[in-house]
Length: 159
Image 1 (tube, one colour):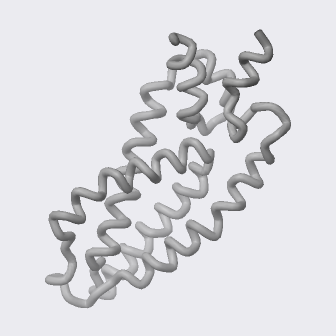
Image 2: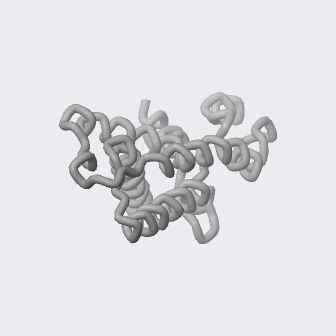
């Protein structure tokens, strides 16, 4: 029984066997990624409102991009880093708006992707809010269960 549970255990899962690094290390290795995203985002402003639109084809890619960031945030357990980056992006947008600068299509794409990710994470947490096993596995104020933990607990046990 214990061997089967160990096989199903995702090696990067929080609370798993001593094979994975601590959560602070996992969050720290994503800091350069979000810092580069924010630096890129800070250069996505234009003085003309006419250039501030996203092409239709790019709007189709907001969904997959938001889904990718959702998986990154939930599986990597980096919600705090993600939310700080999102708030920094929002603060930058508000600051640049006072200077009459607007997001260009690249900045809007990234901003929409982050907004969709935030919505997906909120829906994920709301859906699994009352799950007693996941609540025990992820104690604390910030409850963001990993997709792999959900899969291991609820999906793979049915097969």
